[in-house]
View (tube, rainbow, N blue to C red):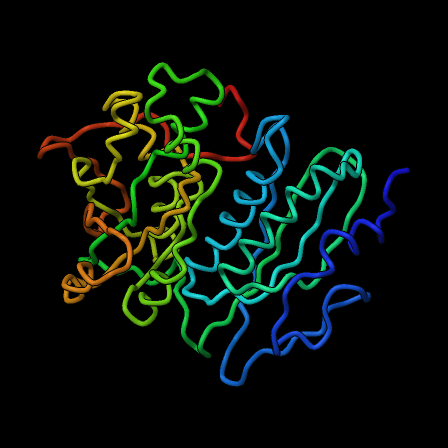
Length: 320
């Protein structure tokens, strides 16, 4: 006998951890939550759709990691401390093995990042997963896309292009299987840069997480900051040795700039904070500077160059 909606929630999600900020959690029409004194609430929602963001048959625990990491990355980009999660699941059928695998991994991640699952919804339909995340920010302190200034250093965390490499391997196979595990991990289990975002509060002038590709997301910063430009040194863009070894330098660089879904942070930093970069909890590279020219100029070892494409757009036609 298949599970009812309420049995599903009670069996797999009602035991989610809570803290003192949760006055009323799962089991009623609404959650009742308390924002600490002196804090504001940052809220974001992220969805994964089968056939658009993941392949049919993807294990449920990998989907939990991907959904959670991508959703919390938005909080990281604003410097917020994660607090609560609401979850919406659209399922073809209430598969108990799938639900056990998904909910167990989600619970592990919630415990790791001190997030309370406080509510959500379930319905029947094509497999779609949505996570709404809530985080705390000190009042009147936040990172945004707007605020970059001419002369700012353009910085990125981690390595770029790995997620796109993992996706290509899923779709087309890995010729070099040595690094497949690393690239698949980067695709399925992005690490939200929460601590980095919190450190950048009050220091970085602008910040965004890299979901649509470096060039695309950097252009969002420049546009929101009043139509500024950028000069990028492509040899400075951090690319993993695993990606280069598997797909070659040309593809690796293309994906680092336009592949998307790495969920690293791109931020602009006043030059007087340069020394901060060596003290951060994750490697950060300076890849260029903000300019007053409303364009992104690309240079490779001092020579101007061009890159095809700019990033991912959910609604772009295939023939665009």
